[in-house]
Image (cartoon, rainbow, N blue to C red):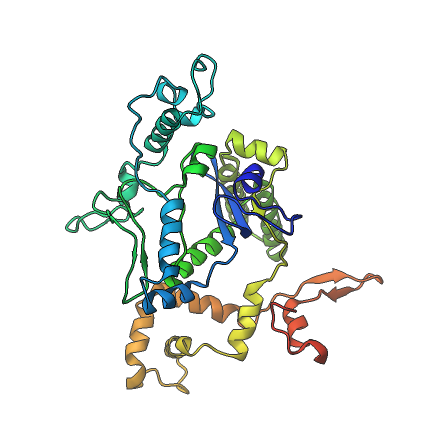
Length: 411
């Protein structure tokens, strides 16, 4: 990964005058490593390029003049950078390693027993790229593609959006919406960059974020993805031990049957955790203390849940109020409190909707339960007494006058 960042992206944090890599001059990147079900490691990465515009600015330029020089240059850059078809095989190519062996298992066109010719000739490189794309980038539908297609009366759609019919012969901007429709010559081939594919020699996908909708969708996916932490075995054991100890402390007079039930639950949990599978690649990553993410910048932690709770208290979201009031009405109905009428005609539909939506009920119940139950970190002071730890919420709420004009991120 470090070689990819240094040589292909051309990013060097110590170089103030970057000349750029295969995608242009990279301003920054953020990548997160994930293990697949079979254990192979792969990386999801976002790259910010120098001179790139805000997606909304691109959309405005495209709507105002889809044939402008800017739009033509952008399309030419993307067509040159992103490919999605199997290149033609070479007709005059001698025998090369990636023809006899799996292309991902060999490093290029040079190999013992295959060196009786010019390994960098155009025909050989073309054939090697053809073998790579055909083996690594061509999608084959499996049952996984259609696992969300529950209705047998409707045509099945691949959840990865790949289909023979997804052919677009020429890249263009939609004059009405400003959306960029990239050229797609083969609907079953994942997007790839030729230089990156030749270097990493494995499956890849590359996407240009060129619209506000696409940017929001990708950002949601990435933020949701990188904040999903894998439960480590030692953390799970410690948490389970603490939970059982707390149960013992709270209920010292449990009956023998209750104690046996707790021990059975503990054994089941330990058994499930101990069966967690780790691939050799993951184990080696942990043992060698290799990175599980790659970033060009350093970041400060922001505990968003506490901040969100503060904002929701101080500035309640208008769109959430109908559901909250309906939930309170439902609660009032169940508790028999006559101070608030749950039969008000204007709220009947909302109450009915909330009552019939388990997810809404669960979310509002969770929020209702923790509304007045804010966690406070504590530490042991120099005199042995317990003191409250510093809180980002309190630091922001009670900041001095000298920095009150700074927003939360700047503080």
